[in-house]
Length: 121
Image 1 (cartoon, helix red, strand yellow):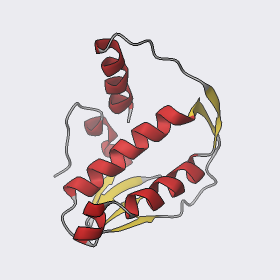
Image 2: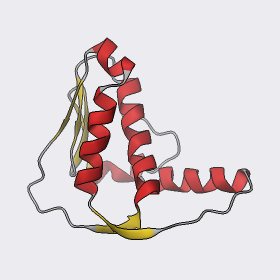
Image 3: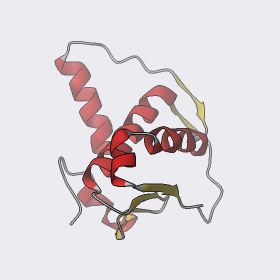
Image 4: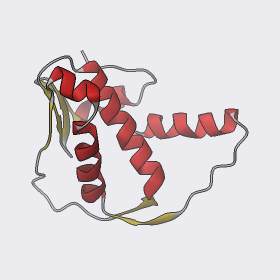
C-alpha cells in the first residue's frame, strides 16, 4: 500500500497540485465495509458474479490517524484492481492477507507488493 500512496503523491506532483492532508481519527473497518458495498454494485462485479467479502480479523482493529478521503482512495483503487483482475470466484478482504479467487498472498510477502506494478502469481 505504501507504493500506491507514493504513486498518488507523484500524480499530484505531476499535475502541479499541492497535496493537502486533513488527518483525523478514522475507523478503517467502517470505511472498508462502505467500499465493499459500493464495489458489489459495480457492473463488472455483477457481470462476473463475483463475491466480495470481508474476513473478520482475529484482533481488534485500531483506529488510525490519516486523511480519510485519501485512504479511501487507496483502498478503493486496490478493490477496483481486485475486481478487474478476478475473472470468476471472488475477492476476500483480510487485514492479515490478500486473497483473490483462492490465491492467498501473506503479509510476509509484503515487500513484493510494494514494488511498482507487482501482481501476484
